[in-house]
Amino acid sequence: MSTLASSSVPFESTDENTDTQQADTSKLGIASILANVTEAAVVTNLSGKIVGYNRQLNDVVPHIHDAHCITDLFTLSSKSLNTTCLTNIGDTVGRRSGSFPIQLTRIHTGAESQPSIPTFVSMLRAPDTRLPAALLYKLDEHILRFSMRLRQIHIAKKEHARYAKQATLNAITDPLTGLKNRRFVQSFMDLQWHGQFRKGEDSVLILFDIDHFKQINDTHGHPVGDEAIKVFADCLLSQARPTDVVGRWGGEEFIVLLTNCSCEQARVYLERVMTHIRLLKVPCDQGHISMTASAGYCAFSQAKSVEHSFTQADTALYAAKSNGRDRYKKASA
Ligand SMILES: Nc1nc2c(ncn2[C@@H]2O[C@H](COP(=O)(O)OP(=O)(O)OP(=O)(O)O)[C@@H](O)[C@H]2O)c(=O)[nH]1
Image (tube, rainbow, N blue to C red; front, side):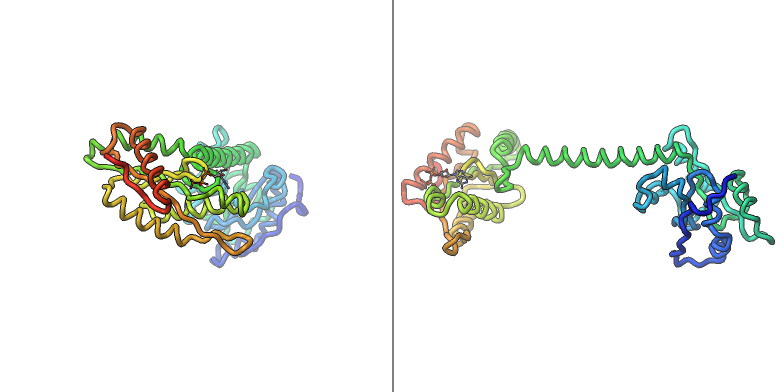
């Protein structure tokens, strides 16, 4: 057996658990033990905490210094590592790693005379049945590679799920404001239209349009215009209920669908939101600018279809604009 004394990683005893079995083990010199094991190996204490590993493991697992790599491999270890537990770990890890059952060997201590290091190492190769003071996991290179592969697959799957979630979110979100986009609102309104009558509910569709928005752009520039749109969007959202849908229809036009809502309740929302809009402040070079908006609304129960309710609300919005802006108007029946 080759002696690899210089290639072991120094034993670090950081565990608060100072039971005698562990002390006996450290006396044996885990670094020496590891140096005499030609396979990749890692030693844990009885709590499953890693107290040493050898350089061969380093070669097999390139990211050995990432503690998680190691601990992830042993997430199956238990705090009470008795024989049954060991067997379970071996079985489970064996199953996880396909055809390579993990070798778990218990290091003997507590005997009258401590075995010599070579004897000790040979004991590692021939599992004994005596009480463990520490555990030496001799890891087959294939197992390690497999475990690393599992880990990579796991990370890749998580990444993929994250990207998929982000892509779904992007597909329904307006990038400037973070509000729902037109596509989402359209689908939502269709669903709501078909669902609400069965439930005996009503919804109210509101169209908002920022007043004289072109002037904001022309006077203060597009970035300030963009900021005004964002501030406005936040305001609409903050005044709505979680069950309502607030979306950007395009440009400086917004749509809000108040679900399970009557026209009277919609008026309460509109009063509140219009007051908040008048108080908004958008920073610009000269200090800040204020804005107002106009709105038109229509209850689904007033309309023949989603499209019809939209046209009705749009006509009401136009009337609000024509009547002086900074106001809301209900669609005529
Ligand atoms: N900054 C900025 N401007 C936008 C955006 N989308 C549309 N606009 C601008 O919004 C302005 C809308 O102007 P108009 O449709 O004439 O309406 P208005 O000036 O708000 O006037 P009224 O609606 O009649 O009160 C146009 O100048 C568009 O270029 C955007 O994402 N950011």
